[in-house]
Length: 272
Image 1 (cartoon, one colour):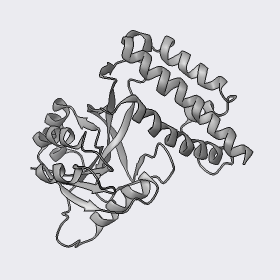
Image 2 (cartoon, one colour):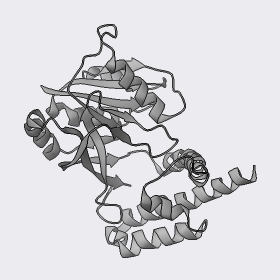
Image 3 (cartoon, helix red, strand yellow):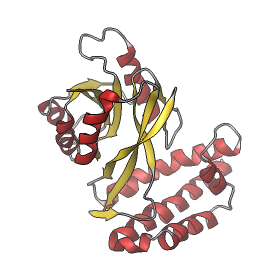
């Protein structure tokens, strides 16, 4: 078995959790922990059927707080003899999955990873509206694997990242973000995201938090105008148009509509 714990935070994820766990099976992780915070669907039943350990924790309001809670549970020496300690931790969402090529490489290379490596970046790939997104937002790498005890999630409202104590490397592997819900669900979820990102944007303006340089430059531009510039860069200059229908849907809704929605929410917060 691979000496790794996979952590998956879930709400109502019966649409995705089976696929995520089925694609994880070849990795043979020592432990898969599904953290539940909502009832009313078959997420729990499906997770158990795939050999996952299910843990309940009431939703604390932020993804980062929920994730750090389970990290703290893993750090304890004894948690009802339910959880085990492993050398590595992998973070996935229920609508994400590792590619088969990545799994094979991880099984081969994790056991001999140099001790000074504390974190591992994987490439983020996307499917949207059933289409592969190959341009515009390609090439993004996120830290998704780290040594146990060396990483925690930064606590912010949106786009939280894992921060590790030590060296981080880029790994020749990828995972997919492939949500199967319809567009009504997607838009409603992003309305909530927009409120949270607006709060982060104002916290940045007050000097309370920091973003990566590119995002800081974006938020220094005029509201709404920056959304149209961002869309034009993604869709035309970075080749989003080459992805056809999927490219249009992804870049319009996530690259323009959502960015305008965030600016609208920023205006509401400023007025209040």
